[in-house]
Length: 122
Image 1: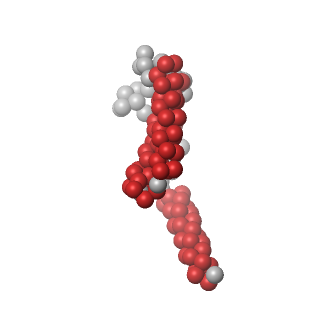
Image 2: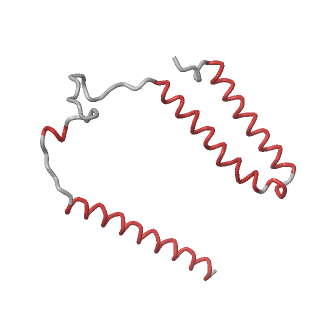
Image 3: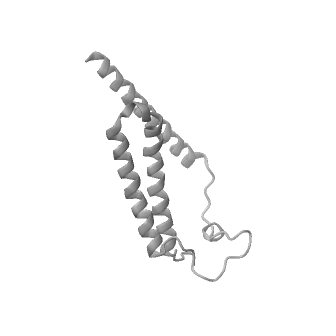
């Protein structure tokens, strides 16, 4: 039990030190960084050119969000697939079939997105 508590004390100590370091960095930045509130600082930056008369906020098409969600889905797949591949020989048949089912579900999601035309850049 004492070893377990020692591990938690180390995690708690690292967390407290982390908060102190981040807090001191933010406080130091507030105190030491130059701060000026001019109109030029509030304008949007457009590659050194005078900003257009259009509003600064612009709408982003939903297609970008769909690509981002698909990327996250397959990124999560890689997070699950690599550790499984490293321990493939030791996990047994049940883990193999579970991973096959996981890949089939992701393949179904990809097929659905493909059928709906999400992957078409228009």
